[in-house]
Length: 448
Image (cartoon, rainbow, N blue to C red; front, side, top):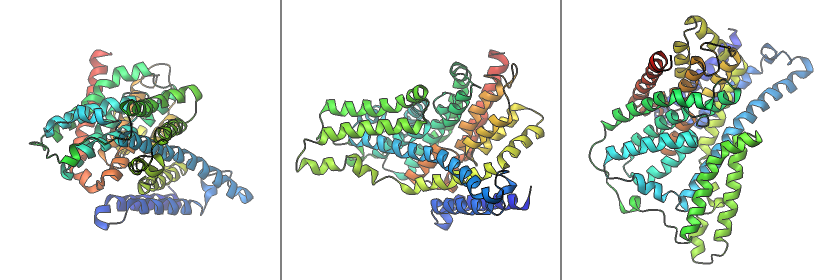
């Protein structure tokens, strides 16, 4: 490893350390992530020709710009998807769309609510995606649980359940979508063999977390009530719900039909929902208009958590720099050599790394390093590819910043890195290992 490469890695590690101790330094993680972005790429520019053969002479600027713009384009798709999904969910919620979901899972028993949240999140994340599902469930939790200490436990379970639910579905997580599109896993194969391991990786942490919850929830009148939607009729509320949730479910279908990135589908749904709600509120006059204004998209856009968006931008672009200098690829190759091709250990370590480094470039690196074989572990729906889907998805639950769902929940509920690591990480790890063991038992005795 060259001195420059080592310097870039050190900057990333220092930045990551300060993100981890945000609760101590009181420095917002978004500010640190943006500094990581700038410093890693600034160091990269000292000798770009070391990493980009085309960056020579007069072609340096154009070659580097092309690489950065490619990574920025990829990162922007995540950011726009996040902003669109957050706005859609907030719009549906503010107009009473999730009232019936909230009523269905509402209970005074803390443990009963935990199990309802767990299974609802698990199922929704397989149909929608773990990012959108996390946003939906946090919005519902805010209406049901007034005590912050209880709510962050539920929110942590949302992260675990969302990642587990997304791991067995070809459309439930970005990494499974990547593997599915690449043709290394099939929808039927991944659902058949990963459903039970994914369920186990959620149920065990849910049980362990339930032990810390006793008694009943203290509902206040404000928290227990449903969203007031006097401005809209029951039919209009149902239309908004089905357009919002049905639209989110339509996004993967839209992608498969048009082959456009998922964020385009999200923007389509947002555009349709925006138009429909504007038509519903167009006839209102004062004083009804005052309440309706707060439920329009123009107002909700002003409430988007930009610090979370900027954190995403900084951390993903800093990881992109590590990918460009080849650190991630060498890491994967080293794991394969170290463990002598034991794919359970290789994918298991990759899953643990995905809790530290974004799982998207890790999975992309694995797809570039390993080729599909006609038979064996590396064949289509082979042990390696299916375990990679499971480990990359579920492994992200071990740290709060290890997945898109975790980052969003961290931003929405202000959960600190240290609290999650102390209270939740070991629980997520137990579920993660239990799921791998379950997959091994399936492969050895059921699907042998």
